[in-house]
Length: 230
Image (cartoon, rainbow, N blue to C red; front, side):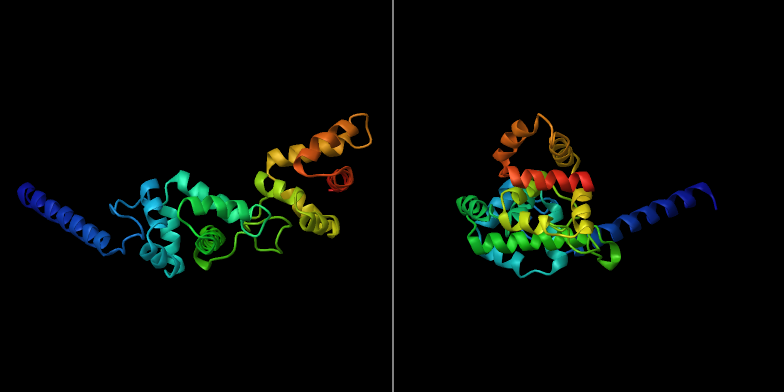
């Protein structure tokens, strides 16, 4: 094949590939709320959606795949807000979270729907093609979003929740160990400091510090023992 003909064939192949790619991109369903169709949901677009009943209805009635595409398209600052909302769901912080949402145009029902949609997306996002949940075993105590980790906010929520503390203190050694192993590093360090202070001269001062987080002396003692027996 001579050079001019080879060049022409190469150019036509590249043009065909570009045309097919552009056609495929055009055929992809637009992301809900993506007004400028750039594949990202900006803060202004997210706020617009929260104030537009038709867009909210479209999102809440969308398939899990479409809701996942919406969540993944969110700018980081918006994604963090919705993640915090999902973590607050069904915890003592929920009423405060709803109050904050109402200031941005979301009713309590809307907030609940978004929180559940975010949780569902998180549960399948890392599950691969089979859609396995992030945490395949029994749920970890106080793991509100089901990602197998206990974040700082989840740990603080547990310390302020009598029912969650009771659940942890009365759990089996295996479940208590799973809770300890799921703690994020900064929280594990705090609880380890608590356990090391137990039965030392530092204990009374340490207990006073942890009361700020909702732990009584008795609660602190139980957590210290759990960490020591881990």
